[in-house]
Length: 423
Image: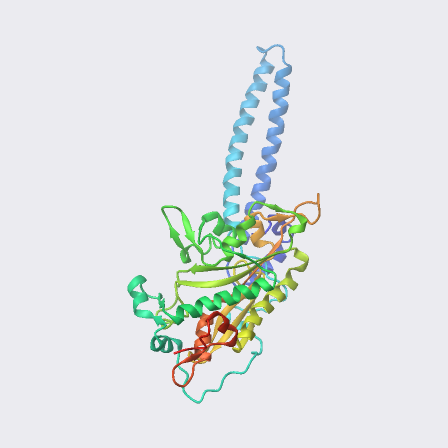
């Protein structure tokens, strides 16, 4: 959430940032409502002061039957009625203003490239050599079915389209990837968190999911709880409504959770395989840091995610997202993609973002820079490290052999108890 003070003091700067996102925002109405709110508040405070003065004057009257006393009492009632009207107007204005502030995205960092959409993202040169095959590489949906490790039909039978079942070494491959990634991040100083997968509406709001993404969320209407779309949501709110002590910062967390999203895509797009599904697992990195270091921390988080790609020995590339493709809460984002030769495409496996103080304001998370100092909002960062099942797709398609088997990456073999290939 943006500070209303920032909008009030720097309207042109905020308007420029919103324009750079190439999306309509309610900024003009917010500015107008803030002016109304301040005027109504000023009028209300002035009337309350007059009411208090009249009350004091009435208390000094000895002759309660005098005409002057009656006039003052009438004025007091009139002022009170007017205050009530202004209070109702103020409450309605503030309610509407807060609703609109929740719809306003984060400010864009000056280093983010300009662009209207994903076609304008900046692709950095890929790292790693694309494997040369002496046979036609197969997509993961053919490999998975042939090896008996991905069961699409039973996934559909259980839950419908865009669901699947992992079997045998397929399930073990996902488990190995998760364990390896968590172990790696712990060596980098992240503290593991296992949060609930169902959260309250205010928790979704604190992370920037509500109200904007309501239609993409799965919800238990009876309990009024939401299934999380990412571990970012509960981890953001771990310290909700708290003031963290100086020694607490920075805080690094890593979490693996199931993620649930209503995938709304064009008919026929990405319908094959496990690339775009309603339920998947993801390892999530998260940081609470002081504002002065947040962009350095972003680069370190990017390196953490890239290091995993390097250790898998799968070619990857980094994208600098443009202003028009930036996420709602993010001020700056890098995407990381792994090469999938069977599908013949680059697959996004990580999105690493600096959300500055945007989420901290929404969740009311603060810290003291030093003992006794005034509380400030920290900056929050999040990044996939990495996301399943696309990482699994990249492993299967890059490590496939001519006979249809899949060799396991060296880094994963300690998690397989001596197994070196899937066949």
